Image (cartoon, rainbow, N blue to C red; front, side, top):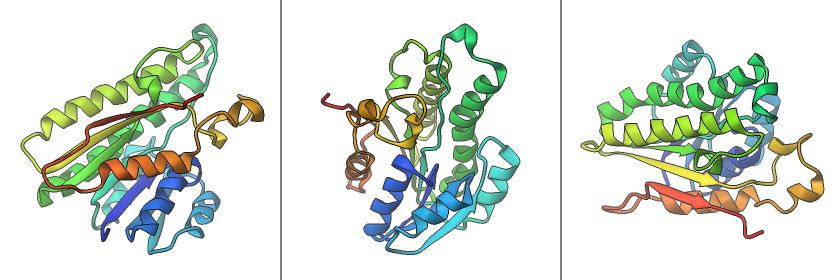
Amino acid sequence: MKKEVVITGAGSGLGQSLAKKFSKEGAKVHLIGRTISKLEKTAKKLENSFEIHQLDIRHKEEVEKVFSDINKVDILINNAGLGRFGKAEKLNKKEIDQMIDTNLKGTIFCTQAVLKKMKKANRGLIVNIISTAGKKGKATESVYCASKFGIRGFTDSIEKELKDSKIDVSAFYMGGMNTSFWDGILTEERKEKFMNPADVAEIIFANIKNRDKLNVKEVLINSTR
């Protein structure tokens, strides 16, 4: 795979696993995240060329600046996300803003930033990591689900906008993974029952691998437990 892949939220969890998988397969990986030390930790695990871009995707101007410095984007993986959980009436404005701004607006901003380049080249792939929270509502996850349902609507819409181009859009909805996302929320015993992010990364890679006259638009990945 001689492609350039941009991955948001690449400092840990699924983002790190995806970076390792794409690098192993020969891609140049652009690591995007807010924390340089985490991105550097991911970079040390890569087998091929990479670039590190410190970026808070909540800020459109910063997104545009960073993406303007990336000459080529064959694949954009919108993976960055966060969750703040609790009863709807107990979530404060900061928690609500964090989820909507990162999960939904960040995905939109990054997608906007690559579309001009992809349209000019008339090729590319946009991959949105959404989660099963974009498929059904869950107690104590009202705003998190709202942000993910928003990404689902955005994904469906841009797929229709791009139907006459050679730019593909894929969405992945997965259940819980054993990552730092759940630190301080769930016990280690509960987390151990969740999926391994490396396994999920393998499934994502297999489904977006370039194949003639074929594009997988949507995949649901759930734990067996």
